[in-house]
Amino acid sequence: MTHQAEHKRYDSMFFHFWIFVALLAIVGFLLSSPSEIIRGLHTIIVTEDALITDYILIAGPGAALINSAIVTAITILILKLSQEPFNGYSFVVVGLMSGFSLFGKNFVNIWPILLGTYLYAKSRHEPFGKYACSGLLATALSPVISYIALDNGWGTPLAGLLVGILIGYIIPPLSAYTYKVQNGMNLYNMGFACGLVAMILVPLMSSMGATPTTQYHWASGYDVIFGSCLGILCLTLILAGLFFSGLPVWASWAGYRRLLQNSGRAPSDFLRMFGIGPVLINIGINGFIGMIFVLSGGGELNGPTVGGILTIMGFSAFGKHAFNIIPVMAGVFIGSLVMHWSLSDPSVQLACLFCTTLAPISGYFGWAYGVLAGFIHSSVVLYTGTPVAGMNLYNNGFSGGLVATVLYPIIIAIFQHRKPTLVDRDYFDPVEHDEPVMPPKPHEIVEERDD
Image 1 (cartoon, rainbow, N blue to C red):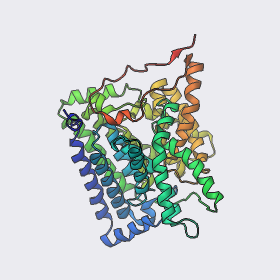
Image 2: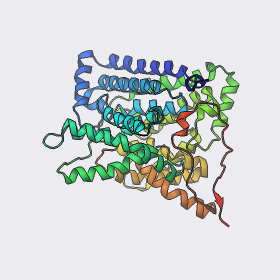
Image 3: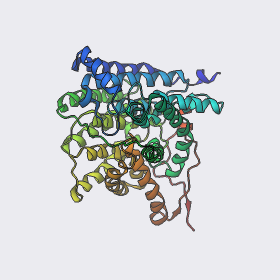
Image 4: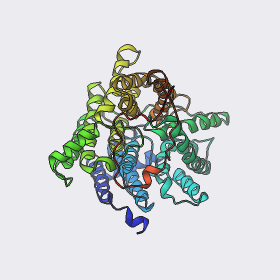
């Protein structure tokens, strides 16, 4: 049996992902006229996209959603043409690409990085499919391409193209290494890898005369529109998981309850462990949790926060669930009570959503450590964006990587009395398979005991 014939379990996801693209496009055209969308897409393409650049503010809601639809469509086609099987990580990639194309990624600035990843795969005589997801997620550094290509008097389009190719070429081996250092405790491993690259690129650019700076474009007044759309989407996913997954309602709900007992330590492919019904329920519930945290904290539903919610929903198929994200979010909330910032601050709103990158700490070690991780992350992330001048869209992944790298060995050695070890699993292995797997035992510790 051929490789392609073996991996057909979740091919129906291809069709359902296209429904999601259609919904993005339909809502986009309902919110803006075609002429406004065309003008908005041009604005998106010619804008330097450093954090925080809310496409809804600078280009209008219609153009932002159409850009998201186009980027998501490109993502789906690349996943399909790469001939790698659809699995839980496919949800991650689609959710993250659709979300961040509301504030930083567009259908032009992602291509140089994808080309670089393709060249890396060819240089190793390996199929591009093995690195397709890595290349797509590496577009976290797309603002670098936009900045170099568009900055008058400094960069050029050719320079932006070459730097993008270089980024796409070096990210796969780097991300494989950073994944092991963090021991699966930071779900946004690519954000950590991209943050390290940005820490080198930004000083180099500054030394050559560039002046990259963080941005502040933050839309408001869209709570009703986006709240309604997200609410309908989340409710539809929950109902689909309960009634249209091919399982009895009780079986889907029982599967979701088992899913809640999983630590979420990467790699945790919930789709392969528990099936589509529990995963859809999990995605919908986590989407509601994200909205509640944003709105209850006085936040806004706009490009960045909706992007954060879509990211949580994507990772709900690969590590996140209510029991391991709420403690980390609670840590951010506690931080707002004792520190000199408020939950209503835009950067903190994003931290409240993206802090869930540290969900495995909560699921693996217990809720108290999750609260601690969220508390620390809420302050660290406010300062990690400055050295990279907003060029790494996954800044919370970079911050989460720092927190996870520090906390993991401390918790293991001091509180668990075990020897911290680096994981030996292949970073790219999860995206190459779709066969069912058994979930690990809850809170299973693989480290050696400290004699």
